[in-house]
Length: 388
Image (tube, rainbow, N blue to C red; front, side, top):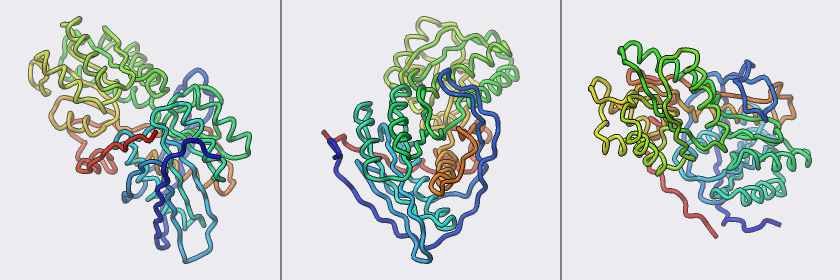
């Protein structure tokens, strides 16, 4: 029986028969993975058609997508969110459900999604995943709260004969059927390479950089730091003078930046592991008298990751010089394309499907298609209240 389940919110979406286009990911060598992950080929996402948006998940939600034009095989997907505390997660969910509505019928599939949320509790996520398995879902997908702990859930689901897919955050232990997410190493490498070119073009003397790290329990954070430092060693275009762990905590982005600027007044550049909390960085720079756009003598040269809405604003204001996108739309469509194969029992042929992201600058952000932060710029997001 389910333990401490959230209230169930059932949403039935009846969608007319639609056809879909968009190719399958093509296999390519994976970026260097964390030590516990096995070497495996990876695939890179091709462009796909734009998707519409749906309603946000609150606690547990079932989204059913059906067609009356033909008899379809039902594909039940159970998705465990570790938390639902930012608009990025809403964008992912919207893109998944809308794209599956578009592509499913043409593949003979009717997708039924069940989402639940663990509110950052590792034990609760373990229980939630077991609930999704007990409910008879055909495939279980999880965005892990803890990269080490998620391996036990992957093993339990796979031992029960069902595919288990990690989404966005890879397992550091037992490996799932498939991982779908960002190529976080390449994401950092492309940012750092372009950053070196920007420093050279602007004749920046003796660049001394502060690095704001992410949560090192998250393999994305580990790989981003690795990519940054590998380019630093190769090109020698800057020197990282201090690494500041943030644990993906917005307050630590602020205090870490403020303390690092005070301890290292010589710092004239930064690498921010994610721009979701860039407003915290801006606040610390403002208080230090160093918040200035490109072209101002007080400008701190800034490389970042993701293009979340606060990062998009940073680009628009001229505070961020380069960032590689965390492409929520392509993460979601890549997942759904993979689910089509898994639900049909077809071999994947790869163990990872990775989206490398696109280099975004002050010059090109307005023209890039499917940039989720632009699409959700005017969407209000309210974090659901956790249930006891």
